[in-house]
Length: 399
Image (cartoon, rainbow, N blue to C red; front, side, top):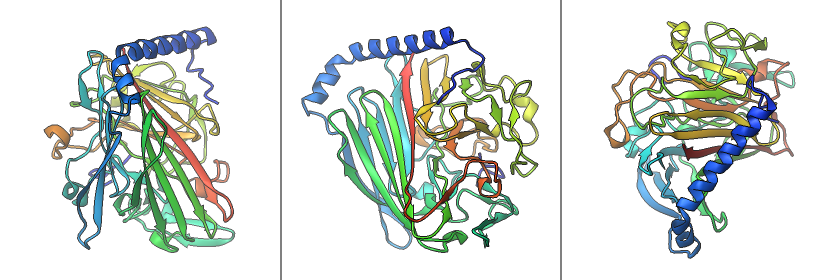
């Protein structure tokens, strides 16, 4: 969802009938069952407590001497996720293809210095407010707040020094017999990047034996403040190359049109007849040329049919050659599809992979862009005495 050099109750309609959706659900359940049988030996080993699910190591230090930790989470299927206390970032995620061969499916780096030099929010926890705020200002209870303008005249992803650039407190936490988890905590002080109130945030990554990577968010404040947290991972289910051949479906009949600066107009429109229509599975690259030169690909917020609330399916992606499948489930009302429109191949990451244009896709579960200034959009205001909670689940399989 970045630009300018990258520095920057599921309705399940998707134009499919109920019978079709039941068939898809049954197929998914069957695939899960087959995978479970194939991995029975490893599951048994895990339940015998012979596997270390969470490991931690010092990964380096920031310029001011803060120690940064790297955590490695493993499950009984051989899936590996790595997360760091710098930015509460997901740096690496290795999952198997249909033949059992694992590959890293998120953009990231294997060293702290690469993150410190700057990057397009690879795998980052974004806050205090994800996405854009028009004119970098908002009004709360009659008082206007000027935020950091770091996207032309607008504010994006928490400002110049958002949550992705902070060192978070971290610890492994109990997650049951079939999962490992790491909790990150950060206290954002009153006035940081222009936001009011002291905000306490927790983000927990949990990797389960069902090949689910779940992210749970929680926040409290001592003054009214906007909050909209997300994860900015770039996925490539092939492990390398572009993602134009990935098949994508999004459970959304509508989206929020935006102006040239990608600030929503306030309208909510149908995706029908537009390149944004992913109600049926479609290759990401099938209509991407219609979105050039600006925004140079997909960088659009979808209004999920679920409306937010209970955990619901938001999107499903499949890479045909490897057979890897990603399902995104969320409690959020929206998801931003972004297709790495401004990567140019100059960055290399895990396994030496060159990060080319459209080399990844983001599905940023969140409230809508500029919600704080759009009274018809779901509110992002958190008040004292209330707790912000949000969950997103990335579920992997192969077919």
